[in-house]
Image (cartoon, rainbow, N blue to C red; front, side):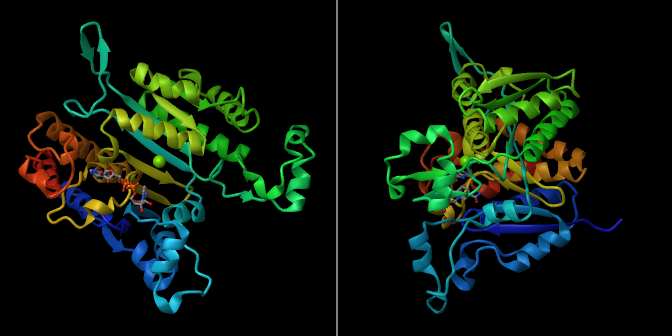
Length: 394
Ligand code: NAI
Ligand code: MG
């Protein structure tokens, strides 16, 4: 069998710190693919006017599996100002390369597990009687990754023909006196195909890993058409999975319930925006950004990344202090995806053991401010956390 090739895209800031740490763990667990480095991020925006160079797209087209760190994004005017002088005023417009990758390869299935590790001091606790309980959270969010409010179909001041088309809807009557330039419209576009696919993936995952419920989290009572379509597809798919309960929640109520009874939920499925919201909500219960891993999966290509960004304020610190666990767990999702489940499980168990032991904790786990002083306050360096995980690999 040909050796698996993994495209590594460290990107910017702490992406460059945490990705090599994940590779060290992969190495230690005996995973030995070829790695090929791909350029992505701010440096390439500045030097080439493109944060997602064509050669990176070609590498992913060829090898299909990517491991991604993080990128830095900046507002349009700031991006333009940092562009190399010879590239200015040549029509280059900055756009986020990770959003670009999701769209280019139609990575429409986003999976974000939020599982609490025993002994993590950041775990959510709930008051009960005179004491407290620490609910075990084991939730996996399936977020539609390419459509909805992120479709990019939006205007401030819609063109006349768009306005005219909208005015065929009776509910537009109340805006008839609003000048177009005072009208901002972001289209929430859902397709049946994409709704069906994300629901299908959610149920298949629930069956494979023994979850008893899939919760479709939208707001179909108000957003009748788009949320309604997601709900309808969830109901259709549910018929093929009689052993799994289909629950329905509204996004607002779900945000309340996620602290009230997070332990009741298993797999959740939602559109792009609500999926983003609930995944951050649940991530907050299990340690936040240092622990939040994710997968972006398309029909051919898949890219695995921590959900955190480039954390510029910590990027220059030497030695680095950020938590590599989110990146390491993202690498585990990659191993699962390519069938190396046993190695992924061993890594996750090692992570769990280090957290449970509680001797090695990065600054975020100690709830102290990040910065060089964190180390003298007992926080572990990034590399020390990785070393501890490697030492625990059975
Ligand atoms: P961020 O996720 O980079 O950092 C926010 C804060 O979270 C940090 O300042 C730090 O306190 C903490 N943090 C993040 N990762 C951590 C880790 N591994 N260990 C310990 N603490 C950690 O988000 P922010 O500051 O909003 O954005 C910074 C840059 O990252 C921006 O340019 C933004 O556009 C970009 N970004 C990129 C993403 C990606 O590559 N997918 C996602 C989110 C933001
Ligand atoms: Mg988010």
